[in-house]
Image (tube, rainbow, N blue to C red; front, side, top):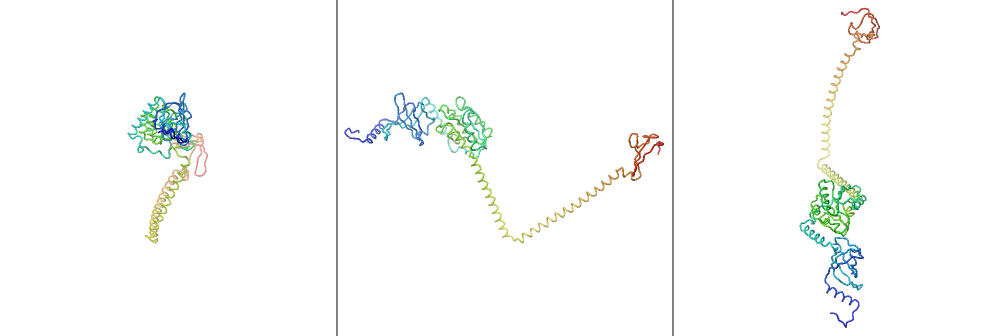
Length: 403
């Protein structure tokens, strides 16, 4: 109750005004245009809600601002649910906003919330069904438009962080009619081919209408059915889509998705170094185990027995070498005998050896033919005679076919 005769301090008066406003004005919806939008580093958002004749200072605390499904901008017409209160430090009234919706698309938000609730009840958002993102991928598939900045941002980040990673783009429309169907087709195509380790799907920022393809149920179910892990990167940090909730990992931006998808190349080398050290340590431990085992054998079996065993094995090996030597000598004898036989045959066929036995070779001077038949010559024909030692030249005096 207000006491007309009481003298109030400034603080008391401000507190009184605050309590009267809050008690008598319940949370209300207010429509207007955003101006002076500012998001503080704390995460709280401050702006004015205005129309042609009035202005209402408004604040949206971090927890409420994180649930926004679009990026508020100056000049945007919105509908705000909030409670009127007084900021006592400045003595100015303001609205504490809990919900913020762009005008004209309230039906989309309602559809979004209904689908989100239904898919959540089916378990599509459960962490248990989500796959791990591969730690060291070598091939990354990207589902987005080839004309937008998203693919360029992703490639730039990966070229800087992980130049060994191969990016494979499946270009699709990312807004408008038919975009959802193309996104689904691209996801299914990558799954059929199996040529990548994971997928990044997404697009840049925009209004809820621009991002709506990623709120379609067919896209959500294609993501849930994918055998490949999927990172969803739709819009800006404050934008949320159904795809974000279903995907195995949500990235605030496409560039952030590239960073989450692949570690730095230096980190990869460091990992290999640690693996190398682990392998060396394991080998060293095994060597120590063998040394301990040998020590055990040394204690159980004397070196005298061990040396005896070595001598026995040496004798066995010597016997084997002796057998091999005998076999080798035998083979050499056989080869020598065959060689001598071959030389004898060659000697018997050597024409010079025949001449040595008293035979000669007669050659016609007329046509250089070797004479084997008397009919090849006529009287007075010139001939050359090859003997074992030397040769003769003669003329034929008489030709006879008899012996």
